[in-house]
Image 1 (cartoon, protein in one colour):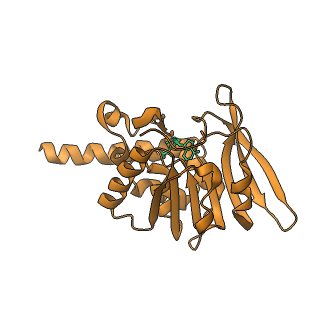
Image 2 (cartoon, rainbow, N blue to C red):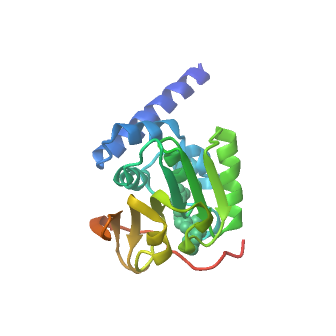
Length: 219
Ligand code: SAH
C-alpha cells in the first residue's frame, strides 16, 4: 500500500539523516535524539522542501538560509546544553536550530531582525507544541538584556568579533558558540567559555554563515 511505502521511506530517510550527522562528527546521543525528534521538513517551505533531509543549507524567506543539519548538530554539541539551561539564540531564521535546542534546554529565547521569519517560526513552534521557546523580533547584536544572563548563547549569523553585549550577557561558567569573520570569506566557528577571570576562546572549524546585520529588517 502507498501509505506503508510512504512510512518506510520516511523511516529510511530519517536513518540516512542520522547516519550523515554521525559521519560528520555529531556523536552526542542527546543531540542526535533531539535531531531525530525535530522534523527539519517542518521548517523548509516550497521548492526546497523535498531536500530538507539532505545535509545542505537551504534558502528560506527574507534572503536567509536554514543551516546545514551537520552544522546545527556540531554547534549544538559544542554548546553542551544542560537540562536546566536558559539559552539565547541570535538568528531564528527558520526556527530549526531553536527547535533542536528546545529539546535539550529549560527555555530557549530566539531573536531575529526579520519580523516575518519570527512569525513563521512561531507558527511552526505552535504546530509542533514546542512551548519552551520564546521568539522575538529584535536586533540580537544587543542580546536580550531583559532576560539576561544566559547559561548558553548561540549565534547563527557571522560577526567580525563576538559582540560585547553578548559576552556581557553570558553567565560565569556559560558557553557561547558563534561564527566570526568577514561575511565574504571563510569564517571560524568559535566557542567562548566565560570563567571567573575572563573568557577562554577555542577555534572549532571553518564555516560559512550569512552576516550578522545591525538594526531591524524591512520585513
Ligand atoms: N538558525 C537559523 C538559521 C539562521 S540564518 C535556522 O535554524 O534556520 C541567520 C539569521 O540571522 C537570519 O534569519 C538573519 O535575519 C538573522 N540575523 C542577522 N543579523 C541579525 C541580528 N543583528 N539580530 C537578529 N538576527 C539577525
